[in-house]
Length: 382
Image (cartoon, rainbow, N blue to C red; front, side, top):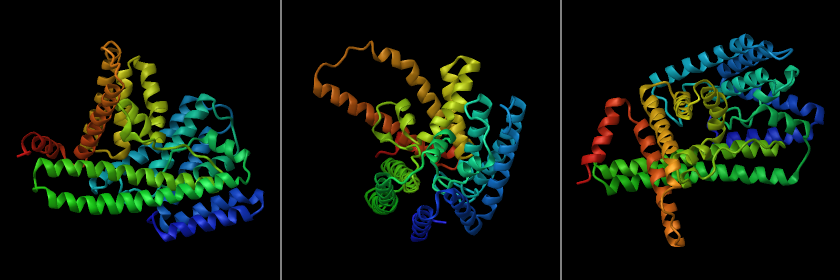
């Protein structure tokens, strides 16, 4: 199912129209039914998996605050299922954007299940009936491509639910933004026009060709992912829900730590809560937390050597920044406004190129190809 299509617009329109026509007590049942119908039509395997994971998560965490054993029993099968599909996906040549090998939405609703189980264990979510968990996990706007929104915020919006014309207008605007980002900027300008121009302007196998390909990959990922997030955020607002933002101008951040605080925000914040913080609690080491968190994010994308290298690359980048940051304030400060702007621009440029190089390297098929790409950058400029 292509989410940038007239068919998906029809699903959005019909879902929203009937949602607001129906009596309030029937609206959330309608959303559950729509999600089931959509998955049954386009991805019945995912419907079965989601139903099993929802039931497992609910029954193992219901009642009084669950103990660690019950929560582990809820989390381990979910993580194992995702891990297994990611290994299979890697063997089929899946990538950051194309997720056809993995059942639709699996990468996202598994993390929501883990989030719910962990928050029940911490006591942050009180014991509720199954309908709230069903509504949260079967929430059609965000089930397929994120954001990985959180249960407390979703339930708060549900309890305060009402018609809001301003929010509805915002939703339409965000959906338009999403279509423009993906269809015009991502598909047409970057993947078509920019790729055609760079092919004509460079020599095959040269560093110039590789550099422009690096730029193309990074821009395309940004427009694709942020555009899909806009679609989900906009759809949710049509239904009266505010789900979390996912991108905030990541390529305009001045260091790698700020980049990851503004790129795929729902995933990085999830990793901070359930990987970084527990690692810090055990090791007392921010460096270990950063490495563990970025490796988890990398393997969430794909279980492979190239993604492990990518996670280590970014994790080590954050560790170096953590170590160097205290020294930054001890350097002579630039008083001139022009100098301050120039230094800011240089920081943004260096950070962006660090990230873009990582995207290029992770697109290589294996460790040998990663080394070859680095060698081309070192020798292929003539």
